[in-house]
Image (cartoon, rainbow, N blue to C red; front, side):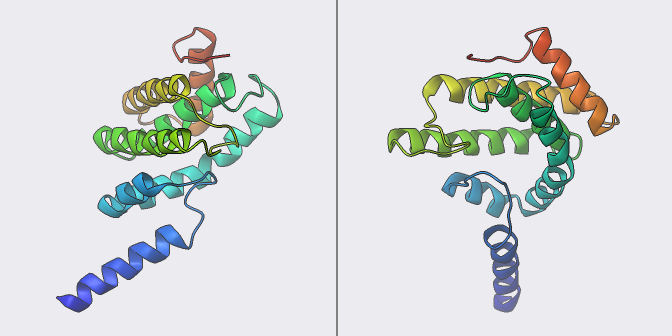
Length: 168
């Protein structure tokens, strides 16, 4: 039994500490989430890597604005990735992931440290991100079978009709 638990710990450590789980900074709350939800974390990592080029396309083509913290691009990022994750991962786990991510942002805010696209997060942007995460989760749960390109168009439509929130 001891060897099995050692193997599991080493496996989780290798996956989450040595790989590029997110392109953003990770804090202790996100690592804790990954530790307690290893299968979901592996799925999230795979989905993120698969759909990151779609996000980059939206960013580079300036389909929305170019504001990565508080703008339409930020709302798109949260809504789009959570919608894609929700197609394969249970909503309850994703809500916990979103909260963990924002808890890390809050701790960076309290320490006045820069994070996520090199801005110091504030309370309003944390609330906006949590709201957009929930809309993304609802969208992904509702449209489980659509392709990521269709999901991109759906999230952009939600931004235009102001279903997703922005600060700027």
